[in-house]
Length: 443
Image 1 (tube, rainbow, N blue to C red):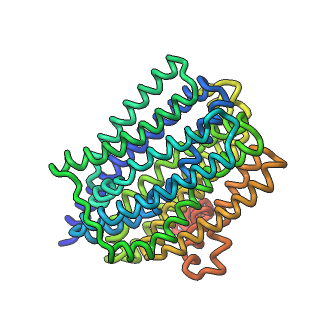
Image 2: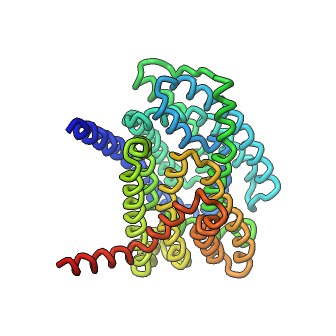
Image 3: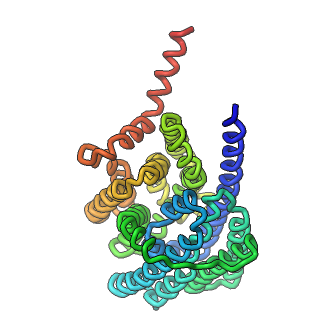
């Protein structure tokens, strides 16, 4: 009787926090999709490929700017709220070093492996320098852990919509692709400043940063597997763009970017719910472990079922949707979309797998999944793109993303439970039929 109000209150906090985060993600993905349609039509496949090459390069190094510590920050803020200033200051100092390393990587890649476009290296570096303003992002994670992200969502959405209007104005002015890359950099800078403003509005004071060297050494021990895992995740989703740009051409890159934009549209649901649920997961893990594991499996089953429904129906809606939104010149992206959309089934379950491993402190196990998949993805891209072009890149992502946990499970004992959970979730329909047969037998 005593626990019921606590459970009801925790559930209410979760749904409120998840609602705000989901609203932010829905707004972001809807805005990205609409803006992507407008820019794809305005720029055409070649220049749209240039834009996506630049953005993909920056996105690929972003794990260095966070050191993969977003989930660790959530865990720290949730379990040690009294140390918020030390956590914030220490992680911010570490992220500054990571961002400087990211800038070095952007310079090397953009100068050694450039796409055919004037001043492409300079544009990539301008976008990279903007990442320096994102080092205070961990402020948001503090309030997500406390399940009170409202003010940050409002400020982020305001900045997002402001820059969307700016980019629409650039379209009306018939601006070149360079102007849109610079505008993307301006948006990153403004979002970073806005995070500090949101903190001030919420608390009435500026963020206080206290760097703790002992805490930094502790985090550094966890940072390596976390950053490897984050970089590997981005490689899954973005390295194919860079390979296509250099091995096939700008037009194929633009077609692939359209398919990717549509296939990733529903990813917001599992990623947002997994992030919002993490504080509650930590609580359940310590108070009701059996209930905790059952809830994780049920959520994975639901995500896999929803993803399968989207993938199966893509044979009916993919071509009409691409033709309607992007125009007939992007119809070759239909086959790519029908392959890529299956990645979402595994992506959804993997969001919960990584949160599960993080809750158990199994950082290296999580990193190994991503690292194995990333290495296999790169190898498959190099093997399949020369022969099958953009479709080879799509198959490489799907195969590597699906097999990574299953290949590692026989070798890494800590991954066997989550591998079994993933198999159960992918085979959700068989389990559902078994339940139905059981129910009929009881009748």
